[in-house]
Length: 237
Image (cartoon, rainbow, N blue to C red):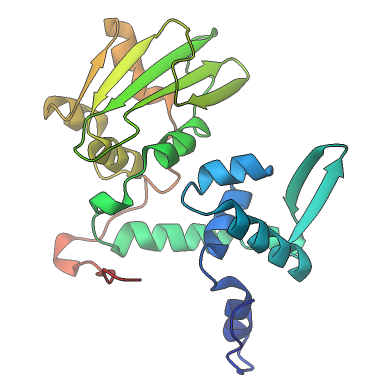
């Protein structure tokens, strides 16, 4: 729990629970369907396992999360109170999309991007067989450059090592550019025309590839006119 504000306002009381570092991002992961510890870690790759355990315990004690055990299988499931935070998460994401300035290099994370992409694959649009998409990110400073999405008819997996299956399409280019496409700041044709990304695949696959992904749920949020300005996030936080 965060430090008490000693105010009767319900906003203050809610923030005593929710304003600790990583708590709302953990709620975001739970709201988007992750229930197991390892899946939560993959959605929060820079959060330590110790802190993740602590935050899950706090949310469980507070009544937002229920720990469900089935033998060795443990899931963390939102309660009714936790599920009611979905519109809060969605509103924060929409506000951030509209008003926060461009992402910086320090915000880029291929592990998080591929994890987000894997849970937004439109399985109905992908060929009805195992389909592998390889990504290679060429930005300076990116350590983990090579990733694979293994798409099966009923499952999608993210790999940071070659899974050994034939590759249907290879995407090479800028992590920054692909992230901006994912967030809705750029269209896929614009990325390709600018040479920000290139796709090695048969022509039919190249045309279909962007349609295999539903993109971020915030990609369609309308942006304000440029004259409205953006909110600047402090460099230290």
